[in-house]
Image (tube, rainbow, N blue to C red; front, side, top):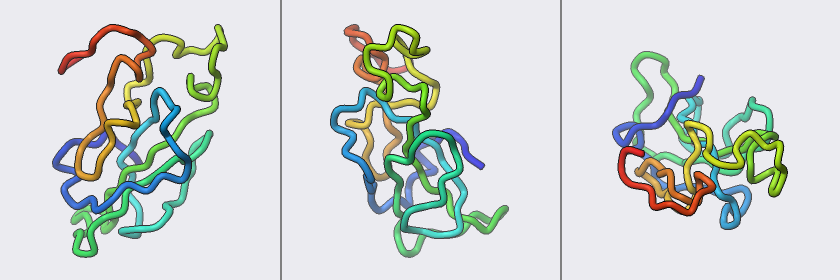
Length: 129
């Protein structure tokens, strides 16, 4: 189960762990997944590849409704632009998926942001766009 993270969902994050260096990636997808551990590599059940995840503080509580922990995962699907640079048939040559953010804007406790880089444009992005 995954959802789009909101600032309040991330209050218990202690750190972001990258499995791959995201420096050269225009965007990564972020999701809030319910898992049974506070830290360590979570199980990954999507197409594509897991790029990173969040670890929670040792005192982070379990969700009252599920008994699981809400942690972010960062990933790319096979058809994403960073996997297909220069491919004219890539569905995200311009723009990006709803859950995609610039990896340079990802920090523990803060939702990542869309930027001109993540959108594949040179225009300046403003809040709410």
